[in-house]
Figure 1 (cartoon, rainbow, N blue to C red):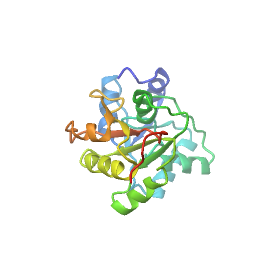
Figure 2: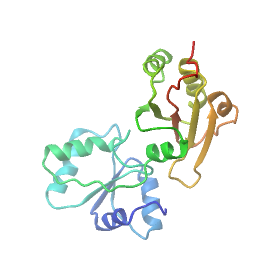
Figure 3: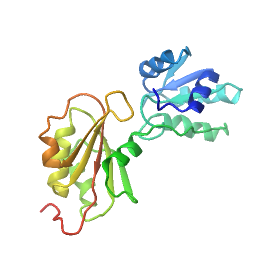
Figure 4: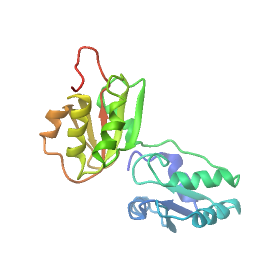
Length: 215
C-alpha cells in the first residue's frame, strides 16, 4: 500500500472509470483508500471495439485510469493495447511512475545489470524455450522473466540445462504484501521448495568469464 505514489492516488480519485486486468485486486486497493469507482476489465480477450469505446469516452472528456495489481501497466500486460489505440485516436496519455516487478527484482538481485534483457513469459514448449535461451549462452546481459508458480521449478531446471548453474534471484510477489526473494545457484534455489502460489519474477545473472556455460 505504501508504494502507491501520491500522483496515482490523485488520478484514481479524479478518474471517471478504472480499467484493469484484475478488477478484484484493484477494487480492493481502492476500497482500502476509501474510493469506489466503476470498473471495466481489460484482458487478452478484450476486442478492438471495446477498446475503441473506452478511448472515445476519454476523447469526450472523461478520465480513464489504467491500473494493474502489481507493476507498472504496459509490461506483459494487456493494457498496452488500450494505450496503443488511444494514440491512434490522438487521446492524451500520461504514465505515473510506480512499483515495477522488473526493476524491483533487478535491484534486489545484486547482479550487474547495466544491460539486461526482459523476456516476459518464456515459452511452455521445451524446444522453443531452449532456443530462446541459447542466444544468451555467452552474453553478459542479465536476464529477467516472469513465470507462474506451477511452472517455476521446471523452468529453472531448463535454464540450468541450457545456460549452466548460474546465480539467480527468484523473486515472488514483487511489490506485494508477501514479497519473498531466494538467491543462489539455480540448483540451490530449486531445492528450497518454492511455494506453488504467487507470481514469480526471475533474475538470471549474465555469463561471467571463468564460469563454464552449460555443455
